[in-house]
Image 1 (cartoon, rainbow, N blue to C red):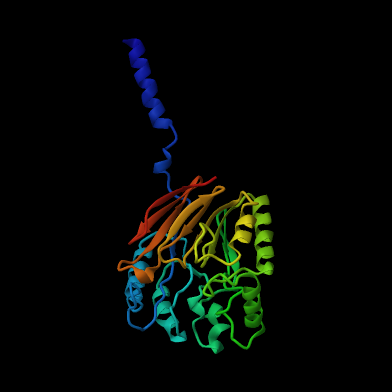
Image 2: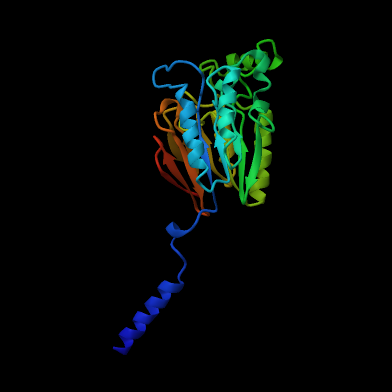
Length: 295
């Protein structure tokens, strides 16, 4: 009896002082991800309810303000077209308690040529591509319209250069996609090198996917994937553009494509909880919950 009593006491004490289970841990921080709001004051076409995006975004903002978010990020195509479409959306996102970061989408440049160069500043971006840090995470925002046949005025050198590159190297790929320039790729590598040394975790945001293979992918998706796979600090690549959504893991990197808000009746986006060993994507609306274990 004494032995049984001692064992019972030992198990009780072990339960009292053992580390909490992973599921009971609090996240290090959390943020919201949304894509392809694609608002415009025009009639619905197919599943794309352009006007309805305002109401969906408003519900998203209300929900986000009830979460303990460090930031939100919109992954491109904030508008469908027209410079005037930005203002109603910005009126809503101005109500967010946490900062919002923007990624450039192809539709964000569906404005008159005179406004194309102003799009990044309209969205409050410090540059067309940039990075920021939260705790031990480095977030890199890419510009998939760096080489593009829609992001520059037709009389500009960048437009002519992009047209020539597409014709020579990517003629079989869709014009509504784009590519990262060699300059941007070098910039990304310089950040990844520093993050590797500093033992930072890295996630990248872009409007365009790179994996799995899909008609919406960046023209030079293979070059991007090859670069990312050189650095073990890279944990995730998150994007929009393909409104159906997608998900895959390759060489320990999670490639997550969010579904387009414009094509779903419910506000569709995700809240990501960041833990030391995983990312937990809590899908809202048509999105699916995912647990992404970090390599």
